[in-house]
Image 1: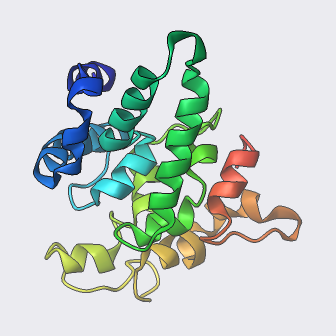
Image 2: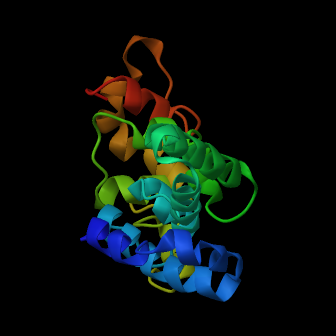
Length: 200
């Protein structure tokens, strides 16, 4: 479904590509793309567009349009779609590392190229909660008016994503395989560990 929507949105992009400089046009396409990305990764609707796109591995529409324009402007015998895609991902990475929305996700997924090129680890509803910080964490649920307090159901500590994923004793057995051999598991190394081993 996402590839069909992208094909429709990108139809004739080399002709109208310069209109992506107008925020209102770009935002219209971004809204559609955000919905697609949220469906792909199972994100809550409060997740920022930037974070949803990264988690789902969906390149922002304005980057795809720019890529199509560059390819169109090159001579047919000089076109290298793989090189252009690499350039697009590098531009996206530069945009991603700048401060803005999706700070929790940015700290988890530092390298977009590595994340979208992974060979294992499908995103799902639960992984998306961990990667976005928006989910069944009482600090989040309290902030949106769905919980009476911010405390963890299991230990009474403030239930932040950091606490639930890395600290709460209730989930110690789930973390145990990743901690074998004196390894540590933090927000800074979780994705790196996931990408290097299929078992973690």
